[in-house]
Image 1: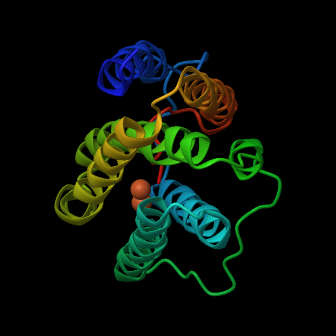
Image 2: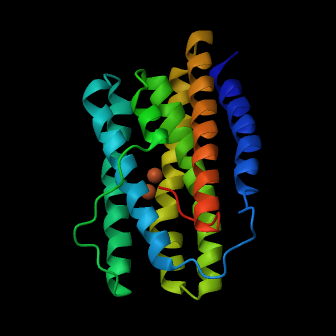
Length: 216
Ligand SMILES: [Fe+2]
Ligand SMILES: [Fe+2]
């Protein structure tokens, strides 16, 4: 199959799984007041995790355009971290001594990917589309909380970058997923990323009492 058709098909099958992710709900009903502090802390964790993931891949990705896309992502996600941190400070939330919790299965899986096609499919193409979708849900939740400055931050700074990362992933897959083997690798990386993201977010949803927490 030509790579453009392949990417279209992958996008469509990802959409089916993304719809399941969008339908996640806590089994005991939505908790009335999950604090913005907790949700922004999750954003910090996700932003730094994805920045570190892309950074770890830069030296071991010989394809120059993929290497540069990953390096740009490192910087963008670090900027998102700083923007969210500034927002927390404006709300009077301290971030001194912040450390992301260890042992996230999603990032452990992504780190294990070794080819450019798998990395692009798992991270830029799929993880970033998950981020975009869950951030939209998070923004709606923020609106309900009256957190308008947080909504604006996501609308104007963070979401355009996450969408750009996904589009970069799409263009790079069209360039590199040109053989049946590469397409199979991409399919597998996308499916596994969505599967683990679903499991991880399901657990978090039950723990927090809301599915409206941000991604990266
Ligand atoms: Fe991103
Ligand atoms: Fe981000």
